Length: 157
Image (cartoon, rainbow, N blue to C red; front, side):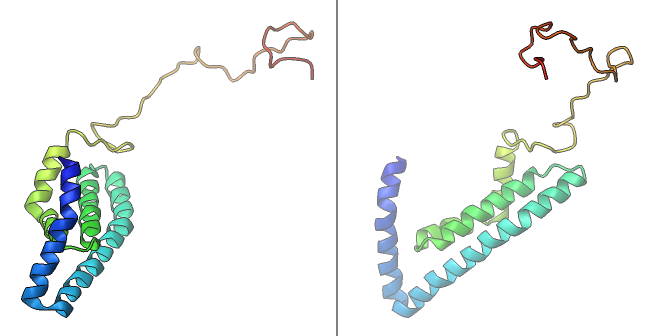
């Protein structure tokens, strides 16, 4: 199914260019394609720059950064679709940018996304408690004779 869609997409995009070109003319059609590509580049650039800082801020505040990560990923996908020349991919990118779809995508992915390093209920650090009898500051005794230990690391110096 995906292979068929990948084969049909360029043909559908060419048909879209022809139809829009006939309705608007060549220069406005090229202007729309170039404008969409510029907006796509800006989206990709913004998604990359702001995401890391926002996710770090959410982690430091002890909040779940999952929605930020999903929104940044959707921005990236929409930006890449806008960069690709064609009107069908532009329409798909606009649909991806709609807030109701973003909320639905987060609800669908919420149970599958896990951010490591997040503070809160999902990621708790593993704590191992020791008493004074479990730990010693003293070094273990060294064998005095060569060959006294069976460890390959404790040979003569």
